[in-house]
Amino acid sequence: MDEEIRDFLLRHLQAVQENDLAAYRATTAEDLTLYEWWVTPHRLDGIPFHEFMMSANAARGTVFGAEGATEKAQTRFDLSNLHIQRYGDTAVASYTLLVSTATPEGVKVAAHNESRVIVKLDGAWKIVHVHKSPAYAAPHVQP
Image (cartoon, rainbow, N blue to C red; front, side, top):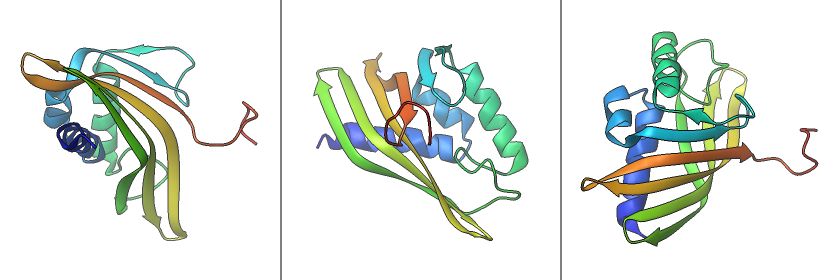
């Protein structure tokens, strides 16, 4: 496994987990494109969408994947089946993101299949594209 890309990806995802806007900006290209299946069936462009979401989550004391928590809940993320393909200054990371949240009712886990395209721009790795899909079995409509 490409440790450089893995370590970069973990830093980027930790920034999202901690609502750390400075670290998120440092690891994300300005012209970011995303597909987030639960938000809209259309492409999202740019960083402002996530900046708003992360700022709102920070104000509420929650993190991505723990939106149902009523107070700052203990969370963690894991990457299941992480696979990295590197081609020079471009890499693709694909995995299932598992976000676990401790709640009074027990631990809840949200899962999303993700692909992130990572490119070295001006000597620094940046996320340029994210594609998320549901992590449940077909049919295409959630049971």
